[in-house]
Structures are given as C-alpha cells and as structure tokens.
Length: 515
Ligand SMILES: Nc1ncnc2c1ncn2[C@@H]1O[C@H](COP(=O)(O)OP(=O)(O)OP(=O)(O)O)[C@@H](O)[C@H]1O
Image 1 (cartoon, rainbow, N blue to C red):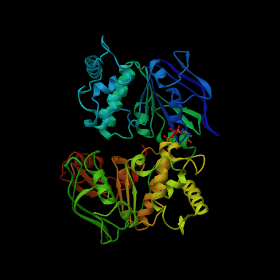
Image 2 (image 1 turned 30 degrees about the horizontal axis):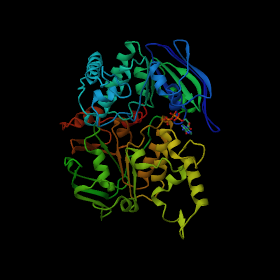
Image 3 (image 1 turned 30 degrees about the vertical axis):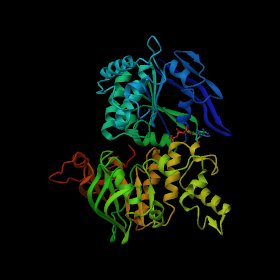
Image 4 (image 1 turned 180 degrees about the horizontal axis):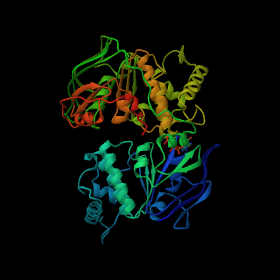
C-alpha cells in the first residue's frame, strides 16, 4: 500500500513540531526517517497513527484521503505501529495479546482463542519465528516481545508498518534478526517507516531516507550516503564521528568491588561473585548481551538492589546496604537504564527534574525556601549546555522527545561533584550530534579524575569509551580486557568463552558509537 503524507503540520502551542511535511512511502519500501532529537519524527508518526490530529495536511493511502479520529481508524485502514515501549500485557499469553483489541468471537459471544493461536502460528511460520502462542509475554526476551507486536499488527492486515526506534532496546543479535524480518516484510509488499538514530542500520536496510530537522523535511538521501553525510544532514553541521581521548592515566583504585553477588526477587543469582576495581581517571566499560547481570551490578552499586552479598567500597567507604539517597550523597552520579522509570518524573518540569535529588538543600533550598531564581538560572544553563530542546525549562519532562529526556538525566547527573559516575546505556535514544557531546563529557569526567563505569550493550560505544572492558556472561565476569580489544574477541567473551589470545585494534580507526 502506498502511503502519502501531504503538508502535515502539527503544533503544540507555539511550537511547530511538524511544519508542512511531505513524505511518500511506496509499497514494498523501507523508508528511514532520520532526524535529531526533537526533530518531529514521533509526532509525525503519531499523526499517522491517529493519536494526534494534524492542524493541517492530509494522509493518503493508495491515493485516497483518510480521516483518522484515533488509532482504531488507522489500524482499520491498514496502519500498524511497533512501539519501542511495547503495548503488550505481560501477564497475558502471546495469543491473548494478539487477540486483544481485535477480539474474534465464536457463536455465543465467547472469545475465539484457538483462532488467535492459529493466527499466531500461521504468521510465525511465514517469517520463521519460533513462537509459542501460549507463552506468557512476561517470560519472553525483549526481541521476541517485539515479534509479538509485529504479529499483532500483521494479524490485523497492516500494510504500512511503523517502527519507532525498534532497535534501541535490542541486543546486537536481536537487531540483526529484526533487520532480516524487516527485509522479509518488505519483500512481502509491506511499506515500512523506520525511525532510528543508528546510521549503520539505515545504510543496511533502508531503500530511501528522508531527513527531518526542526519539524521540516530538509532532504532525501540514498543508503549509499556516508555516515558523515547523513550525520551532517541531520544535525546541520559536520559531526565528529570519532571520540578523541588521550590514553588514560589512572590513579589509585577508588571503587573496589569484592566477591559481589546479587540475588533477584525470584531468588536467582543474577550477579555471581564478581570482583573488580575502577581507578580514578579511568573508564571501565561493562559489556555483555543484555540480561547477563550488568543491570543488577550497576544497581547494586547505587543501592537499588536489596539482596547483595560481598563488598563495595568507594574511597574506602562501605556502600553495601546504604540507601540510594545516601549513595548519591556520597558523590555517585547515576544514569539509569530506564530513564522513565528510575530517572525522571514526567509531570515535573525540566527545572524540577534537574534538582530532583537535591531538592532539600542549598543552593536550591535555603532556610526552607526554594531559591527559584537560582533554580531557573541553573536549569537554563544546563538546558543550553546539554542542548535540551524544549519550549523552556518549565516544560514538563514528559512532553519532551525521548532523546531530550535522556539529556535531562545526563545534565543532572553530570552537574554534581562526583566521586564516581555510573552510566547505563548513556546514549540510548540520543542522536548522533548529541552522542558526540555526551561521549566528550564522559571522557572529560574521566580526565577530571573521576572513576567511570559505562554499562553498554553497544560494542561501538564500549570500544569508543573504555580504558578497560569487563565482559559479563550469566552473572559472572568472563574477563577484564584492554579498551581496544577487538570486536571478535569481545563477541566470544560475550558468549561466555575465554579467548586464548586477546587481539586489539587501533582505536584511531573506530568511528565511535555513531554508526
Ligand atoms: N504532547 C506534546 N506536548 C507538547 N510538546 C510536544 C508533545 N509531544 C512532542 N512535543 C514536542 O514536539 C517536538 C518533536 O518531538 P518528537 O517526539 O516528535 O521528536 P523526535 O524527532 O521523535 O525526537 P527523538 O529522536 O528524541 O525521539 C519536541 O520539541 C517535543 O518536545
């Protein structure tokens, strides 16, 4: 089905999020939408999906003008959306989720679960998915949950599929698999809109690329365009794709972790007797396939895990058993993996979020009174420094684009006096121009003598930043290797193998985490 957007305009108050956007997606085409954080990509897709009403412009499917009062209308017309934060019900089975909102009833009004199961099997077979219709969604890995979303859309005969940053939450292997699935969908005639910040993915799979900046289409590019060309079209300036950093000169060990184990709520040993240290002025990256204990390890350091055995000391101070507030007070900056859950309060303004953990003390509060002038000035400065794009610091954070929300967390955590900085997936959802900035700030933090831990599933990010890399597999550290260890070796270690020799690469030749 051919999708055409003509002159779509969407305003939020005085902000023009979409300014007369034209876009044509042909049947059987993967059309990538590229643009900086806040450029207006998600807004455009929400208009297409009937979640927002455009102030101006038309949506056409196979040259017929459509009127969508809500997502139901969009779905009925053949539009499907694969969300980044899945809209599935975790305690329901795959078949129940696929059926949800599209209930088929048998005679007598009973839900036709067998029909839903059969539909799941049929679509799974078409794409070679190995998916049990009776599996509970909660038990499935993220990549498989995403397939359930795809099946759900296809079971409603979606002819146009929108993928909004689908790979941000996937492991590299799941990403590769998704690329294959998208290729299959295209070959079967589905029109695909693909939003991503990863230029590598765009070049690999897209047939055409449209670039949006500040709400307007600024150009089209072919997938043969270089990373530098795509990046500069997006950002409007040349972007440095390489992280320049001097060889580290680490000081003494500041964070010392000894024989640390973490038991999760289900009683499983998710971190298994790990020991390591991080020196002042050093970046230790913790690499691994998502779900091998990295998250729990970083949470244990910050005080977010309850059942922790072993020892963690920072500058000789015992951290195990301390509350999160106390750990933060001890000078630990923390960027959580899930910013919406752990990092931000959506209804609070940008300014309020920037002082979230310091809202009871000077300089923000003096003699029980909020120092509003100070807060506003501080927030203005930070928003400018971190390029948080919004309608002002009084905007509720929930209204910001995903990447801009991430920048608010980074701005807050990097603006404290730090003794340790722990960043989990620091550049998730962030555009190339901002990744350049965030990586620079992380290296600067290291160079100011702070020990830094970066937890990342992106190997490019790991090799771009790390002085040393600890690879985790099934809760254990397989090994700690130099920052310039080759991808092949890291890949083996991520599968739990200990390589005989460690091969390294020339870090001057890597193009950061931007690709
Ligand atoms: N519900 C809303 N109310 C007010 N402003 C909004 C709302 N939704 C989005 N915006 C604003 O519209 C602009 C476009 O945001 P949008 O989410 O479309 O960007 P994006 O290109 O998807 O960015 P990202 O890459 O960070 O996800 C931003 O300035 C954002 O703050």
